[in-house]
Length: 87
Image (cartoon, rainbow, N blue to C red):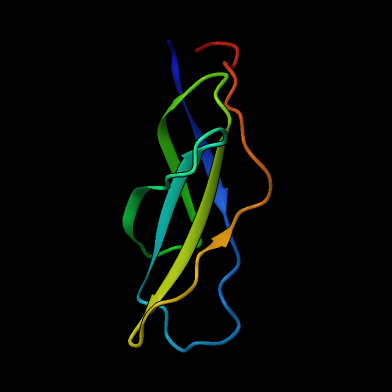
């Protein structure tokens, strides 16, 4: 199968102090287990690669500050990567 990528964006939490990093996780929509994508994103966006075209994925993000890891927040609905022209 062909692999593709998805660009994610989220809003910075309004409370909680200085954010050191974000944790991004994914799961296939038909599964229940989450898989860590990256531990140390410092921006409010990230490009997730290695996704299978035609497979539906869910994503969630948690902020990390001096107090620890905050709650995970789901990012919108499921995303299904598609093959783009020229790939």
